[in-house]
Structure formats: C-alpha cells, structure tokens
Image (tube, rainbow, N blue to C red):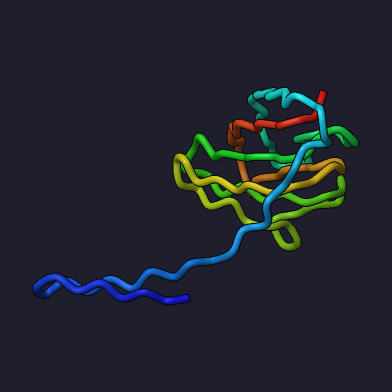
Length: 117
C-alpha cells in the first residue's frame, strides 16, 4: 500500500511492507540474548543453529559492508548485504546457523536472539 503525503514543496511517499509475525510457543517466556561478533574477511560464525531461537536482529555498528548467509561458504559475492551504515539492521525469524564476512578488515555487529524458554 502506498500513501502520499504533501506539505508545501515537500512530497513523501510511504510504502507499507507486510512483516511476518512470530509467536513463541504457548506458556513460554521470551529470553533475549545479545552478543557482539567481529566479522572478518573469512567466514565467521555469527550464530550457531538453535531450535529455540525464534527471532534474530543483526545491527551493523561500523561503516563497513557486512555480508551474511547460512553457511561457512558465504562470500561477499553470494552473501546478503547489511550495509556499512552505523545502525543498519535486519530482523528475521531463523533457527539455523549464520555466518558473516567483510571484504577487507573487520566489522563488529550486534546480534540479538529472542528465544523461547
């Protein structure tokens, strides 16, 4: 759905994108675990697989592009981009392992897992 707002000479178009909701199992309490991981120029384990992990947030804390994927063979060519903007983030439901890589040097990302107890 698009919504256009106009005020004087300023025109802004907003696009609403549906986001999948996630739910914890009935009767469970969420457990939030936040860690910082240094992604290097070789594939680095960002998150191990965990069947209890319900939701993951990754935040770039640097100005270096970070690429991520679900295997140790992730590269800057086949990984999904987390832009090199401080505070750039991605949120998704996922239970498998995740890896990160940068082109050169390193980048620190903050990873938050929300898990069912």
